[in-house]
Image (tube, rainbow, N blue to C red; front, side, top):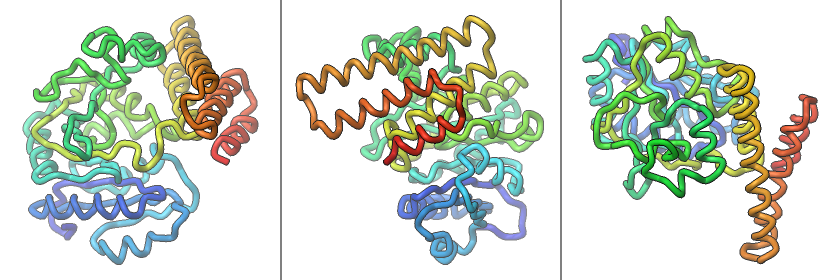
Length: 329
């Protein structure tokens, strides 16, 4: 593991209230990468359980940055970037299990092609079925597809096959893509020095889309590499439909649109996103009338969508924070 010899790879893992799965991830990383000199950097984003020292005791070779408040994913990754010493950096989600040779295969591949700035591997569900992990840049087409459920109606379509990941893509072949999921993202340090770190305005969500777009605009390739495989328990750290995460997703999507689009296109994306929330609110009202699920679950969903609709019509940042706090009570 980490010693004073040349570092083959710096690995950054951001932990937030995920002690058990983070330890499992670290164990798999160390076990499957014993031939590499890794610099492992763990950023703890103010986890509620005070397990940082226990992690350090279990894995004395890793370097830990302990934040007193939750800085968000993008800012935490940037903390790791600043202390990373390797020519290549791997962003690795704590809810992953690294399979044998995945890191070595990926590192060898990115080293052999100087045009690659970002590399993603094949992600598998815990039962080893394929998990879609590549996407196109956020735009009207894929936002429309997701919010109007078109990806479910036309899953194999190149026009509407986004959920938001590419369901039509051949995940058994190496290929250039727009965006790879940040669960496993290998980055060339030289590229990072040229395009800069993550945009810290993205607290969570959409930062990988913004980062990959800036990489492509600077002339670097973003590549999917299926020979390397990991298991990814998607949603193990944060539920995709929890109150805060759903609202933060919409906030990040609007931030991305405001950053990269102008005028009519920016407004249209906001309208589509809001329409998607309203459609879901109506669907759950029907579910409630037909009593198809437990009332506490239905009411929770309705509250999430109602608060998100309120957020779209609010301009008071303090009110936004109050909405966040109320959603998870």
